[in-house]
Every structure is written in structure tokens, then in C-alpha cells.
Image (tube, rainbow, N blue to C red; front, side):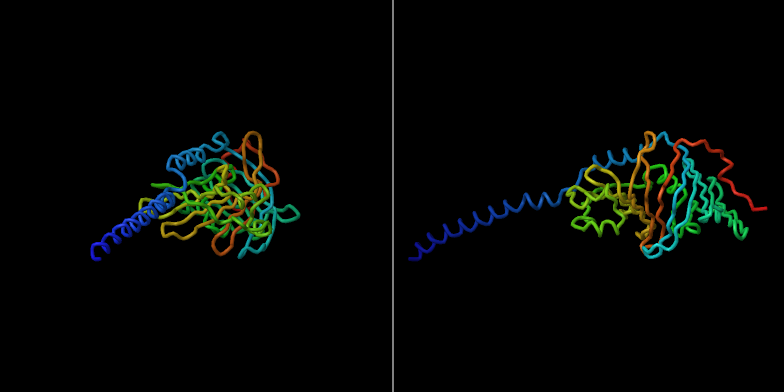
Length: 287
């Protein structure tokens, strides 16, 4: 009896072992698949190279449109805006009343930041670090970044490593939700797109400094910039794009922070390769 018991145990143990290892074999492909990168490092390099080469010949622009200031994502005020910009960081912006009279002007010539109130006559000239335009837009955005955006380029931080994660931010959201999120009809297919991804640019400590949201066609529809502590500096949403000459540039965009403060810009008219004098980026006190 004792020997027969051992004889029965051996097949049982063998069956259990076969079942266990076959189950493990069935799980192993799933585990390795989930551990793989969402997209390869070579794809990241290729996309970054493409982003760096956007509209390379476009150096100067002029434009007019409407700017809507936002407070906690609520529209606070809409007014007319005109701008002139030149690579890499020269820009002049003027806000006008409904009647067309200038109210406020701001400019950066690459060395100084200028501000003048046409109503009160207030004027100041400052040498700011990174030419931050927070005083004008309530958003900590560098003039260099703003110029790049208006030229149809994506601002890129200095980074050490890059990687992808899957973008689930818009999947399954309704058309109404997408509209309130600032997603245009051009980009609403993103919600059904299983291949939407986020390109992460990280510093040498592994902290994310920039997130670039891509559709399956690798079109950028959103960018998030972070400081060294991981705090959001600003969020750029490209709501709509247009073709001017041979360039692809925005016609509607939104820049905001985590509190929902910021602005939406509608570009009504856009002149590419405009003739621009360097003196236009220097403001002087009103007489």
C-alpha cells in the first residue's frame, strides 16, 4: 500500500508541475510585453529631430487677432492684439481697444524687456532673467518660447533622456468634454486613437521637464513645461493649425497654468516672412 501511494503521488506531482510551468509560460509573454517601452528610443530621437526642423526657414512674422485672458479657465476679457516676432526671441505685442486705440505694448529685443501703458504713460525697461513675460500674460512663459510657438514650432527644453508613455488623457471623452478641453475638430479623433502617446523629456536626475502629447500621426496637440521641482510652468494647447505659404502655423492656441489662468489667442491674419526692422522691438517712453 505504501508503495502504491508513492506511485500515485508521482503522477499527481508531475501533473501539478506541468500545470504550474505551463501557466507561467502563458504569463511570461504578457509580463514581458507590459515591461517593454511603449515606443522605441529611436522613435523618440526621430520625432525630436522632426520637431527641431519645423518651419526652419521662417524667421519673421506679423499678425493680428484676438486675445482672451483666462482666470480659472473662465473667459475674463477679450481684446484685439497685434504682434511682430523674429527668431530667436524678439517680439513686440500691442493690445488695442475695440475702437482700435493702443492700450498696452510690450517688447523684447533679446536684451531688454519693455512695457508701456498708452493710457497712463507708465513705462519701464528691465533686463529680466529668461525674458519671462509673466507681468504681461500672467504666465511664466519665456519670450523665446512664445516666438517659437507663433512661428509654428514646439519649444524644447534641454534634456538628457527621452521616453514614451501612452496618452490616455482624452480617450473616451465626449465631444462636449473635448470642446471644453480646447480640442478642435481637427484633433477630436485623438479620443479614439489607441496610439496617442506622450513624449517625456527628462533631465539628468530623471525629472520630467517637458511632456509633448502626440496623435498617431505624431501631430503635437499639447505641450506641458515643468520646472526643476516638477511644478507645471505652463500648458500649451494647439487647438487649430493652418497653412500659410508653405508653413504650418497655429490659428488658435491656449496657454495656461495649473490654476487655469492664462490666455487664448486667435490668429485672424498672419504674414510669414514679413519685413521687420530691429528697431520695432525697442520701446521708448511716451512723449
